[in-house]
Length: 217
Image (cartoon, rainbow, N blue to C red; front, side):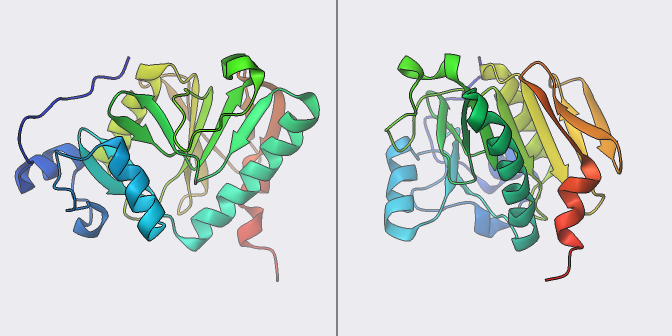
């Protein structure tokens, strides 16, 4: 399981830099003070400001997707849903799908797939932040994501039992596929992205995913 660091005091700037790397200060919420935030604060910020924040060790970190990143997420969501839905394999959620992966840990993958076997009674959750662990998590990397942030996120994902993670990188037009936090392969161009044993039978070329960026309007 993911290790959630418990703190008895507010974080310092040095703590934030050490934990998240050179992240833009605007992404770290100061209300509540870093180190003191809870799941209730995640819900409050979303309800009052319509902003999505992950909760990591008592710190609220805003999600900051760009327009092109969102386009890529929509393409992958559509492809996955068109495959998963007719086969009744489970549910696919987008970048608003907040998940409580462990006590004090809320993550918001840009895309998540949860198999039917992981759903209570095989039905979609009704809570705003369900305590569910997806089988697949997809992150479309944004310019404000730091290496340290994404390394920690990867450890959290595999630490709670996520089986497959995709990191989609817009500048290089590549998709890094992780079977574990330590094992990955980078795919590009005409190479095929598959769902492996997590979404068996699903496949698409990397070029097809990124083609939306080149299509005329």
